[in-house]
Image (cartoon, rainbow, N blue to C red):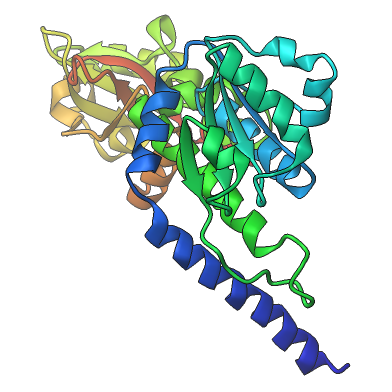
Length: 321
């Protein structure tokens, strides 16, 4: 088998799966809406289970759900039939994934769920299956050819199940108004943790924030910009609002025989750029790069003109690299 044949085989697999995914896209209907709304009202956990390859898909869906604001747990259907059914209560919901919908391992779960008023969402490609018949809400995987060369190994069907699970998770997190700050709580470490860092996590605040009154003389400005070591000092009015910013460069450019007569308001740059405390650190870094500046004052959305902190480009790079 030559290189071109192998590449063509790979593309054919993707093409076959895309056909199935397109069918899935067209199949999303009111049952999907009903499932998302029902899951949003679950007071306990969402248990996700499946047999074989469907079990691996179930585990991934459960993990995504847990990280996006809905407590979830994957459990093997075999383990559930051997004692772990005890994790299910009437406050929970169970999502069962099975391509055929008739796997023997699922029978005990369906019976237990019915007896204990546990919400069951069934995902299957078999509309006549026991799983679909006994589910409170059914989500059908459209019939489509498996991408496997002999048409038997779960490929297209598992891809569709995974994508349907992702769709459930994302629609659910939107319905529950899950925010970046919420996501950050579940991802404190690694590259995701860095991406979720917010400006408020790294900003200099209170006594560490370089700030002077607009009427401050140049001596006070020099002391403040030197003491805080950020190369910038903010200028505020009598209301505490940020009205300008002074940089080391501004000071050097104003040095002349009248230098010591200047007030902060005389040498400041007006309309300084700022970021909100809940903005992502990486977005603040991009803003500094695009405007060729090294500092940004931080404000809250409640009081846009009152500075509550300042971030330096070096603070951002320390985490971004």
